[in-house]
Length: 153
Image (cartoon, rainbow, N blue to C red; front, top):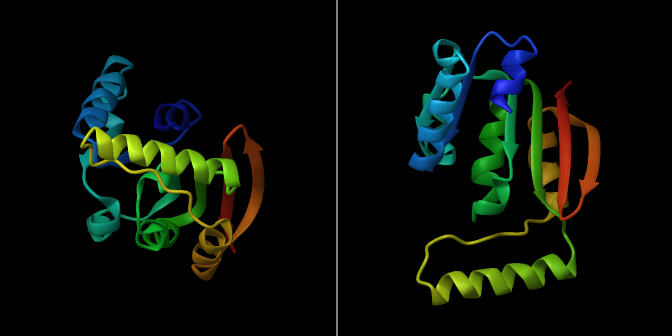
């Protein structure tokens, strides 16, 4: 998404991800496309390290909220950092998603993996974002995902 925003005219981008592998791949992709000079990638837990990242016009959290156990600790700083737009993609809140969550997390437990999947309350997500002064302008469902875009009032 960062590359697409740069292609559309963004001056620069900063990517923060907790996965070293993801950051390394993103850096390499940006470099191979000639965008290494206008991109920055950091390995960090945004919920814990948000104060080390400057505010941005656009903040995107694509398939991230579902990987974090304490949704407000992640979504609130994201909303506060979004000067104009916040885009979030998170799992549908449905019985079958909750069943899938249990099954996936059981499998991760069996495999002794730390990863867990979370289906957070949509009302709680929207409340955290709107309390930070953003309002929903796009709300779409696609398969198992809900995508919402919020703008600063």
